[in-house]
Image (cartoon, rainbow, N blue to C red; front, side):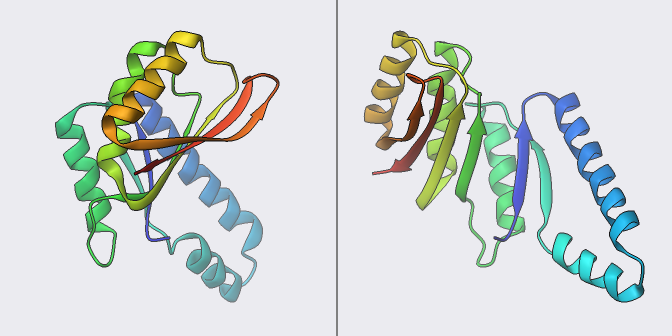
Length: 160
């Protein structure tokens, strides 16, 4: 793992995420580091993977380029794609399916995966739209876990 990127289109949400991350690190350092060796071990284990916070509006090509640039900045060899994208409860309306999946398609590398978790069932219109977009964009959609008739589902998307 070379880099972890946190994204959202809402700048205040990103700022809260950054603040939460910093507070967690401070608390971790305060509670686990009683010696200099403890401090060095904690810094090396926690701080060895860069964590980036980037604004990303799905379907926005300028935001997409900024995210790809940030990925390239932290990867060796330099690459502009993600190996793994995680999303949870991000589809709240059928209209967001296409821009979300277009963004995912643009960010995934050859063997990359997008895992989408949901805690509620999608309506039939959203399911149909997801299938249509996957077909159009060359994405394969696999249901990895499906409990309680779609109320708890994990799906995997990859490029075909």
